[in-house]
Length: 353
Image 1 (spheres, rainbow, N blue to C red):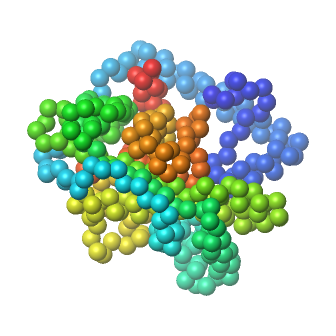
Image 2: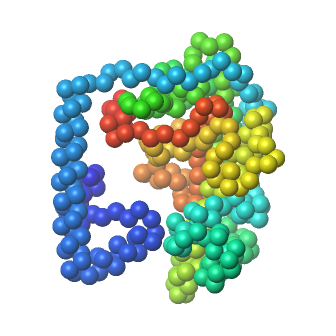
């Protein structure tokens, strides 16, 4: 909707790498391309009409004040062990790989049909073959001097002020950054700022932030593999780097909870981790609860991400290397994942102008 008006050609979107391959094949067939263009035009017209109707409804029924969610702060705030910057270089990939979510890696990214782990237990040949291919690429990553896992994280004092999260210096008085988050206009009226104690509350609160990365030589090596005709290895390497960065985020978040005094029970399994069965939540910019990628700049300033681990932001606020994950972490036991509606996001964008 934003790109198409600025570009004279066909604009299409693929949800993931496998969908992208199917889309590329469609675009190479003249008849299929023409049908795709017609379908996109119809869908675009419907989206425009829907947006216009929503804007009209909002204009006639403006939502100036949304009732905040009723989040309890009648609880003891866990104190972090320190307010120092922590930088992790050359973290052992062998410790990270077990935290990779197999459903995301094998089913979503590598296109396996069915329940991968159950297929492995049944020793089905296609599952075993795909797992062996991934293990070979893992060995390549372990041996390559340019592929390293790095991270930076820090705890900060914080307060909420309406829909804003105020992040303070260690003195608890100097405001370093102000994050402005969207609030749900329906459902529960949730806003990320609600998970921090408000300004004026007696006891200070804390938030953690981090960035993980696996790189920086992944893209170069993947291109070399592709040029040699190793297309599967090239694809596996790229998605393995993405999921390794996510796995590192899972591992680091677990360590942060332990440092924070809200560690997991010894009985917690990897499946429990993937189902987020622990206290607190981590939220990444660009996702439903905090959709503004621009807010990455503030997190990058607070952690000096580029200076400490070499991850940079592009003009579109995407991270480079691509295999990188950033997040803000709340400890509150009521914290959960939620979505902002299109109307909520539009209001958030207007408020940030």
